[in-house]
Length: 117
Image (cartoon, rainbow, N blue to C red; front, side, top):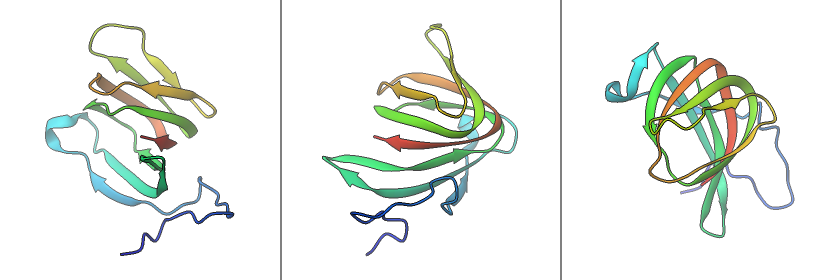
């Protein structure tokens, strides 16, 4: 089956305009707000998945996978269950989340990012 979002070699795409597939955040992860998450996988490289991810304004919890990301738009704070200082996310932020890290995402403006996981 072909991926309609696949980014073919030697081509480019505007990641801020890619249509995403949306789903509701599971109830056990939702703290406040009706949260929707959208994703589009663009492809893979050396065993890593590359795609676009978006979250509507809300507060949700998650347990992370090992991921590098670049924020394209929006604002959020990623708070850590172990008490370390939060990550403040805005356009241009580059970050790395470690697998197994328990987080709370406080999204104040719809957040869109490129992920490599």
